[in-house]
Image (tube, rainbow over all chains, first blue to last red; front, side):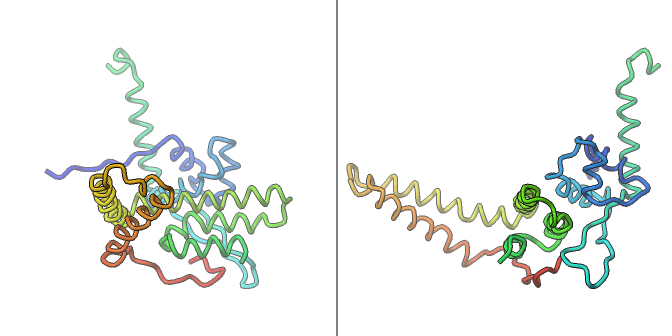
Length: 103
Length: 135
């Protein structure tokens, strides 16, 4: 019997998916929008892990040919990432019920 | 060589293209984007790039089984030779008590452990990236 590995979403990943739902953002924008709940030093590692899981996708910003330096990266949530986040919220709500409420 | 060049060269040596692209390059882009900030902020941004590089190396080491295999191939013979030296050292040999003796034994063990691992198994390297190129 093959074992199915279920995806997991941490609180921080859930927050990032909220911030990226329906719009593209840069990494620094996400740190500012998170209002201290996400550290600037760890944002790209988090986003890289989320991209590996398929929760977000990214692309390089479009710039003119004369622009100096490396292009920044824009991130957005995937439909799969949002689906997993919503499923986890439903599960959390269900598990938070007291036995009397669950009847 | 600038700070960004140094990080890029180190990334070429130790990181896969995709890891550089996703973790280190955006941090460098932020550093360059905020280039005209005050000196203290510039230092902070550089530290963030260095931290991103360290995180990327950690990600590589934990996700890429070839690096773990290479580390195991070095550590196993190193433990074997260290045990052998400790077991076979003549009792009361003063040479092993000197710092010079310990360093010499350490170098010999390192060469004997690293040599075969490097010769027989070396993690795949990526082609060098052109300066200023992200992807």
